[in-house]
Length: 249
Image (cartoon, rainbow, N blue to C red; front, side, top):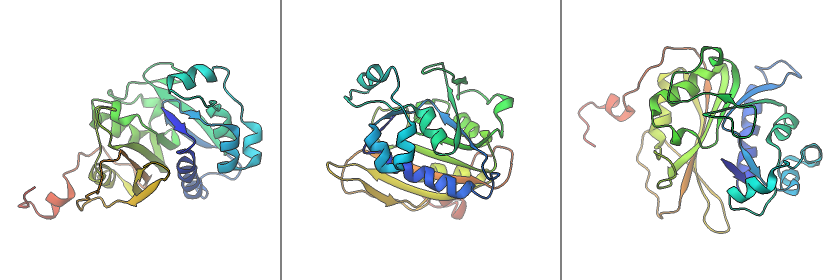
């Protein structure tokens, strides 16, 4: 998965919210233990990093040795920043989970299967920048995400809302709204990201009401939720049917 120069400010916004929410829950000076689903390829320049995160952060991040190979895979001419150095410069202790070792050092876990016991409640924040849609066993995969974060921790998703054949699934706001509310979380933020030529548009999303867009531009849904209690995994009924069991689609 890749974060490009256009998407970097949005990713920075997410990390800012995460750090703000966790400030009181993490000991002063202690790193925030972060689990990224997949290694994130930051396909950006050091100038892009400086514009979003400042000169101090840009000074300590480097270009990956395999930058050209990774950039070519993403069909980009840009450099690829070392994700580890970027996360650490921002106060995070990064860990990466994937189905195989892709960039080096990943925790190997198939999210279609139950989460390894040692990963349950082990992280302050779980970042999903485009993995959930590639997991066929979607209920198990999202349950794994919820279980991996400790009470007080944060989950972030950035998944396709309208993106045909990118993965197995496109997601409705109701999916996150109802699952996380049923499983001991509170929703902090949820919006649609559109990137028509020359601009980026954010649209606040509701977890229950129907939403109609005016154009077919690809859209990503961004979600931030905080875990407020440990609960056994529950499979939710969609809110509109809970509110009115006789309601037709």
